[in-house]
Amino acid sequence: MAIETQWVLDDAELARLCAEWRKLPYVAVDTEFMRVDTFYPIAALLQVGDGRCAYLIDPLQITDWSAFAGLLDDTYVVKVLHACSEDLEVLWRLTGSLPAPLFDTQLAAGYLNIGFSMGYSRLVQSVLDIELPKGETRSDWLQRPLSEMQVRYAAEDAQHLAELYEALLPRLSEDKQSWVLEDGAELVTNLQRETDPDEAYREVKQAWRLKSKQLAVLRVLTAWRERQARARNQPRNRVLREHSLWPLARNQPTDLVSLARIDDMHPRTVRQDGETLLELIRSAATTPEQDWPEPLPEPLPLEASGLLKKLRAVGQQQAQAMDIAPELMLRKKVLEALLKSGYPNGPYELPDSLRGWRRERMGQALLDVLENES
Image 1 (cartoon, rainbow, N blue to C red):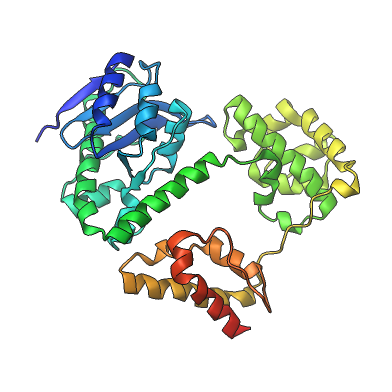
Image 2: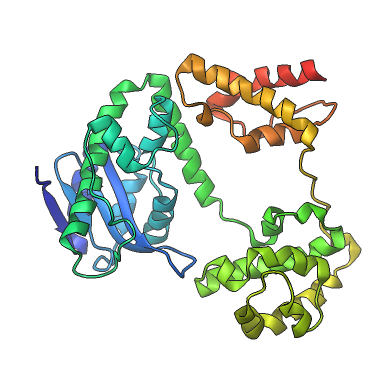
């Protein structure tokens, strides 16, 4: 059956529709974007579904997004998305707002134990018994006009996302509905918490093996890389490859020849930014000792894996009792943060990253496991 589709090509029509959508209990929202050689995604199409019609909003024509931002901010209208981390980035860049409340159908599927991290097509097939067209996800969404298949693909996404919401919502208990929205709010908060360039060194693999003086160099290099990626609108690895950061901080080359020999160092980087990198290293190497970063904590030893497994079992038992996908219960990073707070002999402290219902339902049980082991 053909889906009713309407293009939105000017600011006035978008504003009129946003006023109508704000009278609804929910809208389904999807985006198409391009991100091949850029740091930031380039919005190519926004789709809105209200269950009756699929609206295709052309960001190449729209100049005033204030009405759409108002819709995203309207807490009386649930915004329905699927696996939405990249969509959120597109919306944030385009409108300066993020959806609240946010209902992610991928999360809802996990809370119903249909599956964890399910792709959109698979979830539509499982819940609605509809097979979606394939092959358009990676096509050129910035071309105009869009092909007939692209338009169909985009419209079906919006329409079936609305149908998914209407099918999944009644199956969720009141608690689970609130948890989906709670997790959605956390996704929004995480995206708004932009990486501090001066803290990026903490995420570099093997950084814990560096001494404080070397960390001072790594901190400067990663901060420069992060700021340059944003300023140039290029992927971080295009500015300076991830695998070059650690050996750069450890070996601290002093000339272009030794810089070019650093692991995974791209010749383009040496040509374009070689002298800058050498100056950054020279300058960072003279950082006064009192300004060096603290050594980073070592990873948990292999002996901790058994304890980690027991902690994970707390989540798995709760998942079985509550009929939730076990992967949704306790994230590995949360459990590792808990263990690092007191390993090996305690006392342990629940990390701030264990929040909301998970903390209420499983926090004490996790501490009890650790106390018994100690």
